[in-house]
Image 1 (spheres, rainbow, N blue to C red):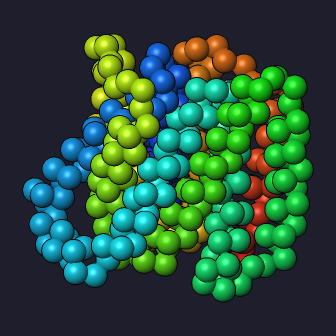
Image 2: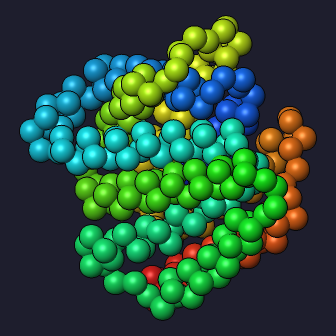
Length: 285
């Protein structure tokens, strides 16, 4: 199997597993901040243990060369997680994952802003259609809760895009270490701002399922897979989550998106697909 095929397979599995996160968040009955606190603890212990047992040399390398960028990525990823969980709790899953699907465009913008990476005309065209789709979704008359959730989703997307850009630049940073730092930072931030961290057994099991298995495994697979494929291929594969996350919630919780989400989401999905295919063709010529 070629490196490209390996990267596509690993990333696809990672994205598919990640699409289950929205369902687990919806299944919980605790606040986003309390959920984030316990999620961070589980993420940290599951990945820190892996580092201690299997990657002792990585810990030494991190302390010497990449600690500042590791902290930055961990803090941004923690913030992205808090906004993602808050968004899932306050609007439909379809809204959140469709808005999150625009991360590729934000990544292109930040890559140009920080590293002067060239931005093709296709990015500008895709940006126009994506923002048309976002405008339709944000213009949905579902009340303040939906608007608040959409704003959380947008903030989550911006922070995630920054993490993606920095990690693409610093390819040698351990993805497991980033996930561990994200976990401990997530818990520390939410501990400071939480009204309560009380939790019952049911919610503890839900968060444990996500924090010990789904989130660390998906992030490590994504981080590993993206070492072998380019950004346009990653963007195309991320559509798996955009499609599957609402499907899981519809199957188990019967949550149906609004007509605005269908219209705006269709514009964004079609734009993502066309832009990713175009970029892959350009890269291979």
